Image 1 (tube, chains in turn yellow, purple):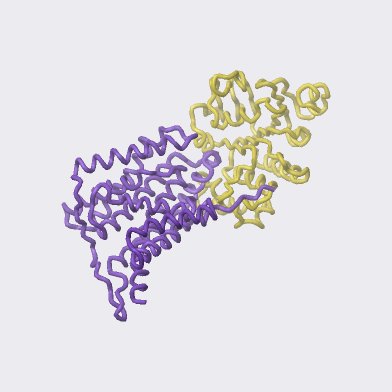
Image 2: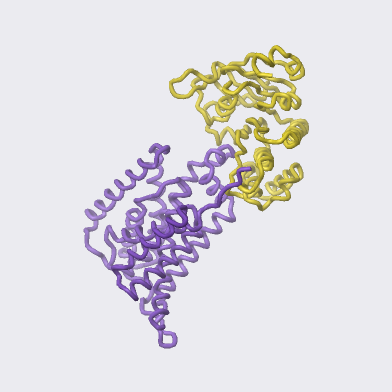
Length: 238
Length: 292
């Protein structure tokens, strides 16, 4: 059984043409899948719809065989699906420690939560040094680390990541993707990683899915996709 | 000097009530990004419930608890039944509905209980203690200060030290991010309204015995001054509400004592204008975020 799937998913805004049109996607447990596509391909809309932030016009979303389609965003999260949205979604008014605790509130009781927070500090040492710093004082890289760590606090089964490398230096991107790859390998976490940074994304993913105008136009092993210049030229612009 | 000390002590108690009511406006603003123009009418409705229970049982304390509980229930009911159904991309519908609610509540209370002022008796004496020949706080003023301190301390603990408080703050600052972390944001907004109106009801309950008595408009002036306090302090800042409340309470007391009661609202408006000119977000408004 696939860990995560969407069937015939159609999403649009207002009366306009659908941004995601009858999309089918299956992900095996523990898979890291790169979701690629040019600007406007529908990557963010797809991830937001999967998390329940955008209502789907039709279709269904399954997590481990459970139908999440009619669940609210909060209940999808509590079922094991986490989204780290684009734009370093740290609650800037809260401290690093509070952001992390917030991520694990529904999952852990007090003592386990403390242990999970410490685990995140070990995973992301720069955050450990800034435990009591308010979110608005963090750098871009620190914020992205915090957003990822906070999502991991909930021990999700499936993690959706929307452009985690946006605005980050290559070194920070590599560090972040490295932690992601190690965590997925260690915990069996299933990851759908939407990225403009195609090379980085394909380096951590086993499989790549290319989205264009709301439909999947290629779905292949990551290495194969990276080596296909025709596809890169046609859909990814390099 | 005696007069100055007396006015300061009287202003302190007045300031505590103002701070409490301003805090209630801050709580609802932080929870729902709405200035609740119906806060005074809702608080007075809760005070009427307290008044009825005190009259029936003879117990001020039973009335006080009833006032807090009915304030919380009314806050939750208005949020669930009314405010939640309004479009949120524009603040205007919320303001118009709140003003409509003021009219409905005040007219309803006047129909049910009559427009006259009903005297409410404080649970402690209002006769000031005399220290060194100078009249200072009365036992009731002390009760107001202690009640306000207990509530503010309790709210500070709730928001700063508990998981529920963390969720309330997160839901207020970043609703979408909070939903993505499993926080039940709509429930937090309802809870914010309940806490806010219960706090406003307490402020009105503490104020009414020191004024002419209970009538549907008993908290109107309190709302106007507390709104000024909340804006002076920074609508987002509970600490701002507390300090600005005490400051404005002292200002009103001193201006009333040394000039005239009529000049006091003008002094508050002058202070509000000055603060808005110098620091438009309020004295304790949030600092700018790092963007690089």
